[in-house]
Amino acid sequence: MVAPASVRGAATSVTGITGSCLCGAVRCEATGPAGPMMHCHCRTCRKAHGTAFSTIVPVAKPGFRWTAGEHLLAHFESSPGKRRWFCSRCGSQLVSIRDSREEVVLRAGCIDDGQVGPPVAHGWVESVPAWDRIADDLPRFARGLPGAPAVEE
Image (cartoon, rainbow, N blue to C red):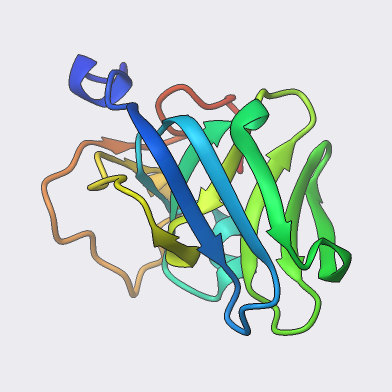
């Protein structure tokens, strides 16, 4: 499925997004272009978060930085070249970074402040478990997300 123009062009320019983990020890910020916000239903997002899907917001890598607790970060390489960064104290997954891309993918649940969203699409809906139902009318993509590499996240 080709992403509708409204989904492909949904990135917004932001002055700042701040985020933190559950215990508050690890904090980050992002400036510059962000989005679009989307729901990812891929198997690895579901397993990593223990949820039906993960709501994500891509931001430009040059505008992202850790502001506290960087020494507490740990990562797991969930697929070749993709690392999911989390707080080693409380376990909150904060971002994922793929070696081959110039973006950092924020986990929306960890965003504390900043204007992003609302979500514009569902990706990897072929991986939605039988017990879950998508109950909105956002565009749905069987494999992948608009603008993302064609591999499972």
